Length: 309
Image (cartoon, rainbow, N blue to C red; front, top):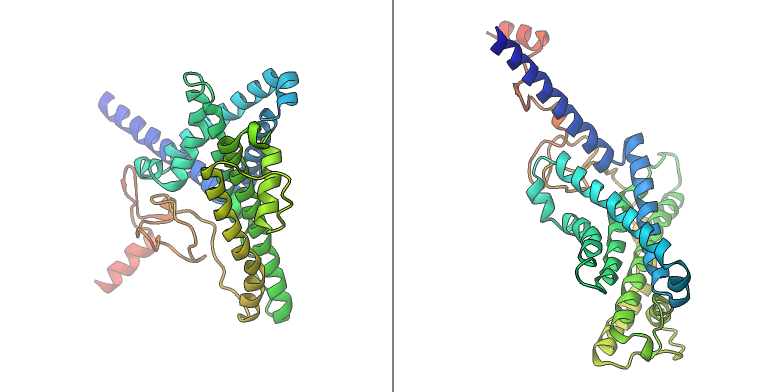
């Protein structure tokens, strides 16, 4: 009797554990739910704030006057992102696969430098990698559904506006990354006195303006500048292509922001049940099996089975 009661208690605990994982997955990985949207909003604000702290820390005057405050804030963000990383590993069905995925590695690189900085001074500059985390919440800017009576031009403009917004955010991410890299490569001795000034140089170079007030002197810096110049020409054509593509299509098929709990892939159809990349069920809660075994068929299923039999 005691063993039976213990078994029932274990089953209830497993059910509660399973429900907790599903709920956390909905909040962390789904942007369609109210809680998911709030989570993504808080996350992107935290990411941008943490990047701002890193940028301010590179300014000598700010670091001298507010160095301790910035250090404490950075550790606060690191602990927050560490908790988020652990929760992501907890709520996915295959934690090891997620840990070695692109987004999983970015999550790890976002918190690892701060811990490494305790042992290796200067490694805190690796925190510029955290800007890559902005890419994961772009799904919040998912395409809105089009009204059937709306004009094709209006549909194209609305869709292009959202895509161009994402494009501009991606460009901002690139100039922050390239500017930070140039700050590390060239340093103050070559005119790159801070990350914001280096970002200014990256913007001037990427837009092919080229004022010439600061320029890289090292071979590695000049190679990076060449890459940025080539990207600048490619970037000019992107907005035109976005609008043109939308004009060629009267509508666009809806896509879901639901992430596969197994492989973390996005871009599924709204009515999709299984992942089109790994064939795993998208919503574990609606599956026929859970952690404690198969779900019993409903009365309707039993009746239909008896009739066919």
